[in-house]
Image (cartoon, rainbow over all chains, first blue to last red; front, side):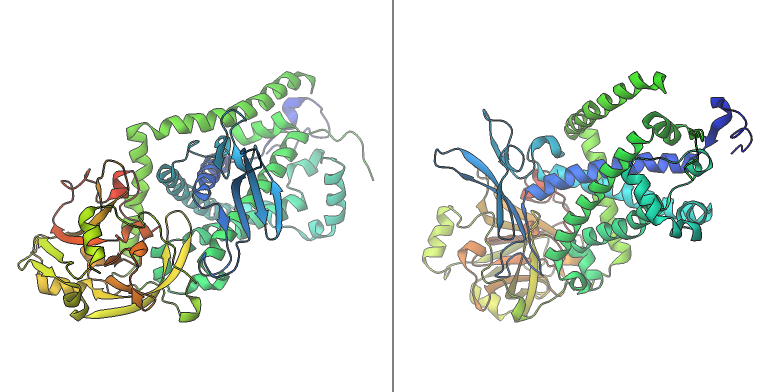
Length: 283
Length: 255
C-alpha cells in the first residue's frame, strides 16, 4: 500500500503495490477451478440431449432453437450438423462429429471439451453438482467479503469520474493502451462494469436457471419457472449464460496477457503488483 | 520486461498443455473410488437441504391441457421382450396382477379392475428426463397412499421398491426403482394406468407405471409388476436402490 517512491524512484521494489488481499486470491482460484469443472461437465451433460428448446417442455410442437447432431453424407461418412433456427452448418471435427477421420465419434461437443471425456452422464452430474456447491458457497463468501471489506464500494462501484471516462476507456481498450502510474492501481470503468455485470447479473442468473431445472426446487414454489418461459427456456438460458461467461473468461485472459501477464498473474498469486511507471503523459 | 519473455512463453505453453492435462487428470480422478464418492457426497447434501427447505407435502407444478406435449416421448424400454409380459400384453393385461408384499401386514394381488377401484388422482405434470428433455402429459392412476393403506406397511418399512417387467441390458437384469415413505405417501405419487385419457400405451409403461413428480424420469418405473416394502434395498440388484443407481446415477433424483 506504499505511496512513496512512485514518482521519485523507478526502482522496481519501490513500485510494488499490494493489489489483491489473500481472501480475494483464494476465492478467485477456487472460482477458476469450479468454473472449469462446471463448464466441461456441463458440456458433457448437454451431450445427452444436444438440443435447446423454448417453453415449458421440449415437445411443444415447435422446432428446437438449437440442435447439434449428425447424419451420413452420400458416401456414408458421418457429418456433424449444427442447426440454429432455420440455419444449418456443417461442423464436422468439432460439433456433431469429432475425434478424427480414423475414429469419428457422433457426439455434440468433442471429447477434449467435456468432463469426463467419454460419454458418461452420471459421472458428469457428480462433477457438476459437487462443483456447483463450491461455486455457490465461494460466490456467497466473495459477495459477503466484498461488502464487509468495502472492496465492493471502494474498488468495484464506478465513481462519478469513471462514468465520464467510459468513452476514453473504450478507446484505450481498443488501442490496447494500458494504465500506468496511479491509474494502474485501480480497476478502469469498463472493467468495473464488466465485473459487476458478471457478479450480480450473469452468475446469479446461471445459478437460478440451474435450479429451475430441478424438479425438487420447482416444487418449492410451483410455477416460478414460468417467469422465464418454462423449464426448457431455463435450460436454454443456462446454456447461453454459460457461453457469455466463457466469452468473459476469454476477454479477461486476453486483457491479462496483453497488459502484463506475469505481473498480473503474480498479483493474483502473491498479491504483489509492480505499478508500470508513468513514462509520458498523453494529455 | 525482457527477463519476463521466456517466462511468458513458458506460461502461455503451460496454459494450453495445462488445460488438456487438467481434463485428462480429472478423467482419471473419475475412476478413483474415493474421489468418485467424494463427488457423490453432493447428493447427500442436496437431500439434506431438501429436507430442511421443502415440505414433505410440497407439490410439483401442474399444467393445463394447453401445455400437453403433442406426443409423449418414450424412453428406455419401449416394449419389454419378457415372454410373460408379452403373453399379458396379448391378452390386453386382463390376467395382469400387481403383487404387493414385503414388510406389510396384508399382502395384495390386484387386477387392473381392482387398481381402478382404488382412490385415484388425475394430474397434468412435466416429466423431466435426466438427459435434459421434458414432456408434459396427463396421468390418471391409483394413489400409492391408498394402496399402502390397504397393504398396511410394518413400522420397519422405509422404502417402496418397484420391480418391473423390462430389462435394459443384455444380461437381463430387471429394471427396478425405490422411493422413500415421504414420496410414497405424497399426494401426487400415483400408479398411472391412463395417459392423456387413454389406457397407458406399452411404449410408456403399460399397464402400470409409477409417477413421482418431484424427481427425474428414471425414478418413474414403467411396467410395474411387483411392489415390495423393505427396510433396506442393499440386497436388491447391486444394492443402490435402482437400475440406473446401480450404473452410478444418484438415488435422490430431485436435481
